[in-house]
Length: 218
Image (cartoon, rainbow, N blue to C red; front, side, top):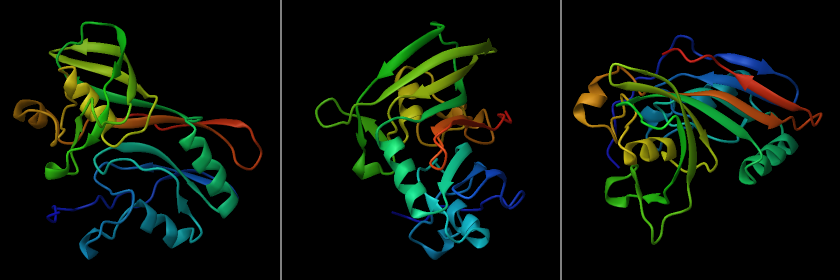
C-alpha cells in the first residue's frame, strides 16, 4: 500500500482521561493512528505515545486514524485478556456521534449489511452478501439542520470502517470521509465527523461496570 501523508496532531500529545493499576483510558485525536503503520514515518501513534509513559500498556481495540474519541488500553496481561474477551463477546457498549450528509427521514433505525475488505482498494471495505461478515449498526437522529443530520451510532459488531460504510450505503455518508463521501460531503468538514463518545465495559480489576465519556468537539 502506498504511503499516505501523515501529520499527526501534537497538541495535546497525550490526553489521558482515566488511569489506575489495570487500565488507562485516553481520548484519541483525529489524525493519529491507533497502532504504528509498517513504514517508519508511521511509527507515531497512540500506542507509541502511551508506552513512553506507561511501558506495559497494551492495545485492546482500535479507532480509525480519522476518528476521535475514547479508547481503553490494558496495563498488564490479565487485564488485557479480560478486556479482549469482552470485546470479542460484544460485552462492551460503544456510542459514537457523527454528522452525516442529508436529512435522515427515520428518527431511528438499524443497518444490517455484511462487510468485507475491498482488497483492490484497501483499506476500504464494501458490502458483500456472499462473503461479508455480519455487521449491525443502530442509529438515532439527534438533530437535523441545513441538509445535515447529527446522529448517535451504536455498533453491535465492530467491523473495520463499519459505521462509515453503513451510513454511506443508506445514502448519508459521514462528512469529511475521504473514503466513502462524495466530493461535496468530503469538503463539508475539515476532518471526519465521527467521534467515539462513550465506552462502557466491565473493569478487569474489580468487576464494576464503568462508562467513560469524552464530549464531541464538533
